[in-house]
Length: 79
Image 1 (tube, rainbow, N blue to C red):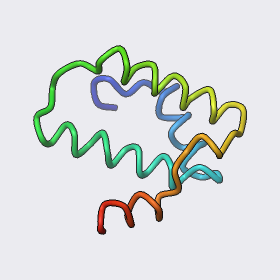
Image 2 (image 1 turned 180 degrees about the vertical axis):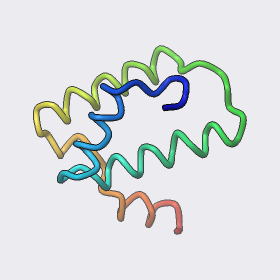
Image 3 (image 1 turned 45 degrees about the vertical axis):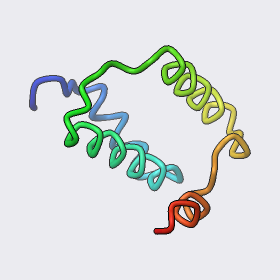
Image 4 (image 1 turned 180 degrees about the horizontal axis):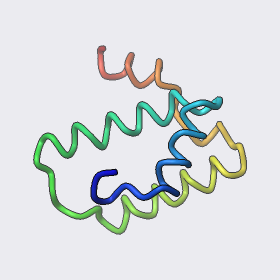
């Protein structure tokens, strides 16, 4: 496997991509990929890190009200 991809990470990815949160994982991966492609190499701000931690906790609890549905985001962005 490539540098930075250990077996545990790969196993987690496979499990999520085969479950009910597969679309969320794909959207998040797209966001990270395009951020990387844009050469935005600045580290995440403390606010961004907090927001990600809150999102992970909401996912752990199964609280879908924390998230904006993808269709609504696309509409807001005119996509």
